[in-house]
Image: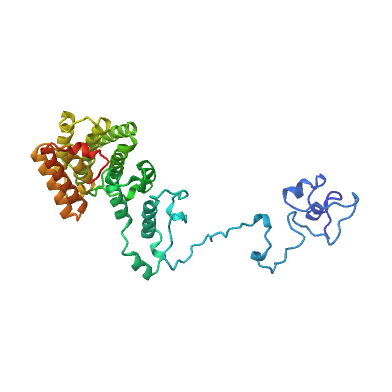
Length: 384
């Protein structure tokens, strides 16, 4: 029968037959091996025959399973909420979700409190985009068939953005957003704005330039009543610099298809810029005449850019076509603007273009009789 190597020390070291350094309350041997260190009442007391070595971290007994459902535990009142919280899990929607200016929805990613009257357009765009991307798979077939009749988010956004400057110029502005408010939100969905020609070369910069050009045109229209011209002129300068920066990156020869399309896209942006300059000159000084050399210079540049474009890209340039027509003095220029507006109305099913062409033709007749000025009419409060 073996005997313990030590006659002193803790019971655990004696049981393990290891020398104990007798450091109370836990010796080094027990501490190093995570063992329960038990000491005798008297220094020379013998090791009990039934002594068992125990781990220092072992609980006295394992906890019994609580049959009560954890969800039934009482919750302290200070941790409760008055409003019911939505589940973190995705719910199966059987009907189309409701989005409006009274109900905020995370999918819209918009703040709608104190929403101005125009907020429906922003909500509509984000709603349609959410339905097209994230929520379509959650809808049943009947709801999808009902939604098929709705225009897509690209259509809603592009129709509004293209016509916004014209609406600001000729409609009741109390029912329309300020361009400073609208374009504050617009860059959240800039990827939805179509460029006139599909392009894979610097497409992000082209899309941003296009939206900035339309934004500047809308702010010029707004300046007719607000007179806020200085910040708009600064923006025009920055936009023109960006156009030139992108243009000089296009090689002079051996262009790729994407680079050729970029040239057309830049022609749209430049046409918008020249129209902005013509409008700015009249807003800055109401006495400026259409025959002014600087006005005619920008008109020649505008006609040159418009002449290289056709089809869908001209739908972006409805307002520039009107602005150019208002300062056209030569018969060739007047024929050009009238023809382009009538073709646009016919090919693109654009009744507003025909109405503008007819208005320009009436103004030209009045100018020949020296009874009206189309350039002055352009900044008047009366629309077509």
